[in-house]
Image (cartoon, rainbow, N blue to C red; front, top):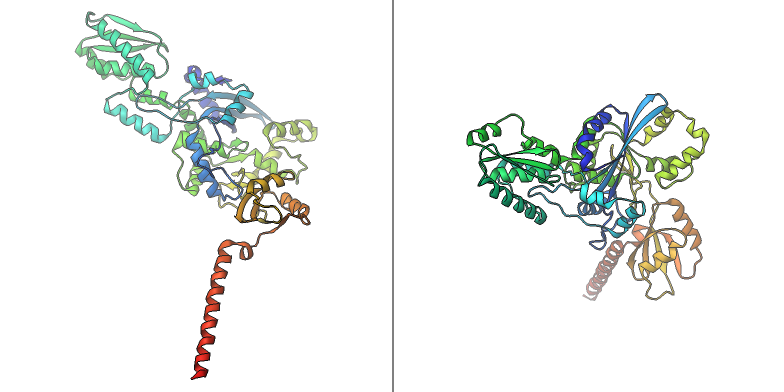
Length: 477
């Protein structure tokens, strides 16, 4: 079920109820971009440790935004049957008063979304607002100050037109008369009322449905009574509830503490933190700690599928659709009870797949395992003048993918996150005439170690020469 801003308020109570009563929640997100090409060298690399990868991904998350979030809420009917309620929420950053956002589009991501029929009109025109805690605090400060300002050019034009109309009307109106303003959408309903109430002390506003506001001329006494009554649709709490938008569902997910299931979900977790909780911290370990507090149980089906294919004769599948098709194609697998699947998944809780880094997963329950990784290789080139890292990459790409980094002239570091690829290139290039590939040894190949040894050699040579010259002088005396 697609949900945009027009239906969100109506659907919110039911979605909250389902989340609080469910057994687990599956989710997926779509973004306006993944990894920024700027600054140069900012793309994730197989050389990156998790903390280095995080710093690069953090910059990209700050640059792009979430355009859709899908939730599948699973509740058990019996030990082997689950019912799923699925929602696709179109999202758009909240723009309200002085609060505004900037984000980028990445061509590849837009082409990908277009290929799968993504509705950009719903995203841009009717996306559900959201904000994190830092943005909400700024909005609260603006509401408390009472000095309401509209920064959007389009909104300013709309507000100016409405104020001119109401000011012209109120000058000749008598107490008790009213006028209705039409074609107001989203936060315009709040902004128009706040600005009119601030500018004109002898009027009051009342929303009529979702697109109209009634303006009524009243006495100062009635104005005071209305400002101090219990319920007012323009009260701070009501405005904050509407401005939070989808963040209200995020808060429910955090409160429920249900298992959160995703496929290749690390970028999703980064955006969840940044867009709905707080801006991503600089410290990688702090990010891990925050996510563990927000969502104590994480299951990444990408990591599970990669880990169990040997042990359980599970065909290798890269995306979620392939995993689903494999499970559905084997009656023996589909006949297993769900509790048996949960027993297998227990070993992979809070281990999230990591793409293009020195390790293959992040452990949100403790320290990352940086020991079980393929060895670094070194390529020595002969008879290939002016060779570049890109040319070495294209040469190896025929067989498998390596990240290539130039160490010195005619010498390149090669890194892969797959043991089988390391074994393959060592075998293929064992007798190659121009490209000799071997295991990298830090004490032998490191530029720093070589420089240190050269300095030590020079110092030792001069020391030996000084010693010999000193002894020669002694003998001469």
